[in-house]
Length: 344
Ligand code: GLN
Image (cartoon, rainbow, N blue to C red; front, side, top):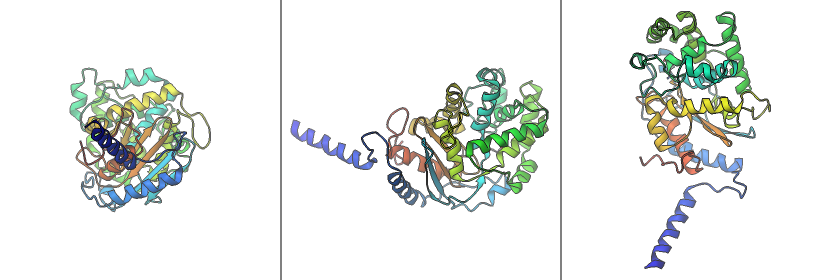
């Protein structure tokens, strides 16, 4: 009986071992093996066509819904990727942790804590109710209201100077020249009435620190920055590497600022999907309605995935599946085992 149980336990152990990826004795998985794993995950996930395009931003609704890419950047700067890696998409809200990071760098942790807030809203990314429900109007920099407040806190004599330093910062993180996708910017400027209303509302409560339309304009430019999946992963890899750029070696953020950004991503990175994401995956992550998601494994790597179809929370369906599968097979969850996509 005992032997039978042991044999069964050994078999289960073996199956679990085969389902995950082999690591070397030093715990580092070679890049070639990661590439093979990404190719498998790409194959398994590309058949999924659940979700819809965000029709509230017409330029995004024109995307080819089948595009799909996954990229990993290791803490030593190596990039490994599969799929439509050359395709540039609008970063949208996946920019939010990096804007928060710049505010942290310029003004410190207390500024975010006191002037914006760090509590998850548990609500949709453009929830007006969340602003109304919080007694001090505090939202957090991962949702639209708090992200506009973050933009308004950027240093600079005028909005142009603020924007210049923000774009420069993204470029430093990505290690690449980046630019606004003009068609997307025009589209969000024209159709972003809800954000317009929220900016005015926050301002009326003294929680937006600039002129609402000027702030919204910078916010829309930040959302419209074009990135490839590997560039987004590189930006995340600075967070994974404790604030040191994995390629340039430059220290861009102090470790206590990185932990602040990762905490925000964990609590609200996927908005009203953040709880289920923590429950099933357990990694700080941030999504954007452009179809990108970036997730960070502190000390090891960042992974980004891109595919345009979104779930009801505005998070890419395939990107979530791909990152979850990768985290599960590589055993990367911060809280312990990651629940594979066929289980809850
Ligand atoms: N620009 C988009 C908006 O403000 C960003 C939202 C998102 O990516 N979740 O609605």
